[in-house]
Image 1 (cartoon, rainbow, N blue to C red):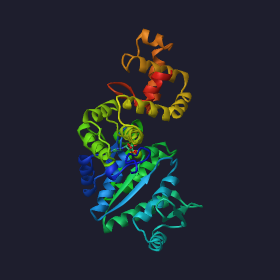
Image 2: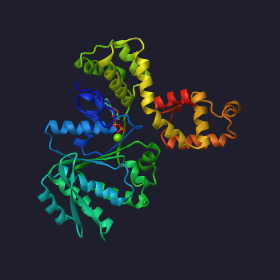
Image 3: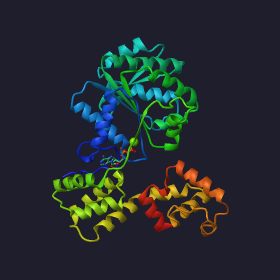
Image 4: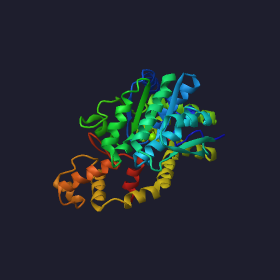
Length: 373
Ligand SMILES: Nc1ncnc2c1ncn2[C@@H]1O[C@H](COP(=O)(O)OP(=O)(O)O)[C@@H](O)[C@H]1O
Ligand SMILES: [Mg+2]
């Protein structure tokens, strides 16, 4: 039987645990064409939640058109526009019809037809030779509005914080907002993780997206939901694990969906070869750190010397009282201002998160640090 646990991509269906309340809430926002800002730290299940809700919409045959646009890695307005065009075939799967529609709606633009090997369907990308990007954005947004005249749409912009890094972010955000505001039959889901960027985009009065979306912070999945889900998937493979052991795993991994999924993936593999013993949990944990070793070494190597010292400071002091003279001396940092600066940059890199105290986000990175430096 195939390992039911998956950790490298978004998950839906049986591999997706609970989030029933969140699915319902997101669907309500979509039904009401109310824009949403879905945010949390990385790898806590935002993309999976969106995909799961899209899956529900499809399975329940609701008359809602869905567009999922992953903006990760885009660096300009041009690439933003291209990504949207590339997904339009999910709203109109007939390529001829779509091309006709595009020819009618988008001025002075030619299109290249490509092929998406993943979905096995044709994709359409604009070729931007000598075309005016502002005009194309306008045409594109009007086209989306046209699609929404026939039926409700939900358009998810995943990794939306990337937009804030474009060189013309200010004017692009303003333009985008001016179109989005007119789309009364479309729910825009703005999704992202780099919270300092996203918060600035939506919560600061000087920015175009200020108060443009309902806040939807994605919290953790509760232990009482993890246990039956894990129990069932293991049972499907004829493995039975005591409830208190499952609880121990969830606790140790601080209810984090990706780590729990990763842990269960390795546990499943292990149990196929060896029965459960008292040492199993430790063994899997070591295997996980081992698997991540290279990634962690690279991460560490790319930090400045003061960032490294600051991480040690956080580790040694459990993220609290980081500015005392003794604490600084213990890691050979000369001034408190260095700590302030490094805490900020490590938070921006999402290595640290602040939740009362400073926490090293990746539990296994923390374990690796404790063992290695
Ligand atoms: N509801 C869920 N149930 C089980 N595992 C989940 C769930 N949501 C996320 N995960 C796990 O976390 C990983 C990261 O999820 P993802 O949706 O990509 O997070 P994000 O978009 O917030 O970065 C997934 O690969 C999966 O292993
Ligand atoms: Mg994601």
